[in-house]
Length: 560
Image (tube, rainbow, N blue to C red; front, side, top):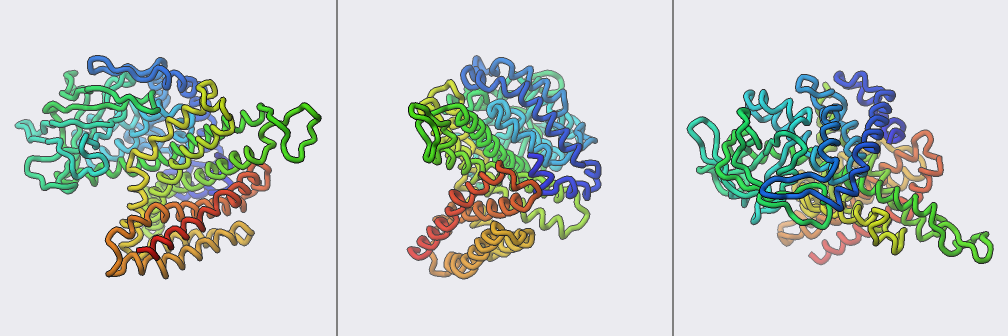
């Protein structure tokens, strides 16, 4: 992690150019990584098995978390970890967003279920900070910033999953200036638990005179407990029985005319909520990276212990077997997944750095570059790396053979836990549609082409950079000469771009990975075997997907 931050991305130099982070040198970053790793390894990781096997328990509206979860969370917030990147005036430490990103990658790798609890905190903090009234900020901002109180994001309803415009939860004005919320929300992570003394619910609902669709939604805040100690009329009806992620209670929440305060302007609820959703999408991308890292670590360790048969070219004596890491079939799996993890870190950490630039840089033009990166790369990061977390973890399970299918080794839990990341915070298909139909076609591809051009200027002259440059040039030509003219033509089928979206996002993901591996390859120390094996894995077994995706888009365009 430190190699990528320091040698590949030059994160200390970038951060020190921003006034709030002038002290963010390599020593500080190393110290935060070391302390993060220590806390995660000693406090959070040991709870992962019980979180899965015992899980969160619901009874009479109350949820009891698995053994050790509350004590670990109390230690977490009291040590200041949730407040890492929050402003000092709000009770935070004011550290860079990229260090928060590394923390949550570690947490996700160690215990995905437990990490779901604080996962929404930073988004809730930003939402309250930028949209809530001064009175609400006074009552809730510091509690959420420090993590003393956890938060939820209540969007989904039984009939309205990704289509938020169908939400029916009602908000009726009350005489005291608050609103009475009535409705049911489902799939609410951490809607009820015993980790903290209070829970802050941020809820999308509809005012009586609001128009239909997403423009009629407003955002409201209702706590589990009010300041006078009385409990709100928010009820957890049950928790879902899930494929995985048993340590995180996924709740059905009923609002029985619960008294709430509006956050932001009426009818602007989605604008305020998108602050939470965009922060969450970066964190979900980091979940993908962390879970794949955990799967790779288990598979790699097993491959260094398990002996089976003779590997090709083996010098083993008759009757002896080689370690399975010597077999090309296993080596290919491990090196390909390692390539995804390492490239994902470059992309994710760069995204977090750009968030710091967007927030603190004094040059408007530089902030625009950062905004372009975050808008275009976040959906790719969320979609491609959560997809790989599941499929790559499944590939890592294959290294164990039959032992991977039994619970003893823990790899099957990662496969189950990782699957949901492809679904929540906007399904991966929605991320693809967002990238192509909302962020590429409307401006004729200008922003994406500019991003690719900027990435090319960062590349060196070595072989990997030449491959990356050739790929970007081919994609640029395909986009300009083939995709854009056909997808926007007057006679094009209305659904043509939607058929292209998934392949389009995957092609962009391959280009980002190629750029990342070119950057890694040019960094001092990248000639170490650990980096060379993964780089070979990328160019041999991952990068060829780029040509496949372009060919698939071409076939769709020809048919359409």
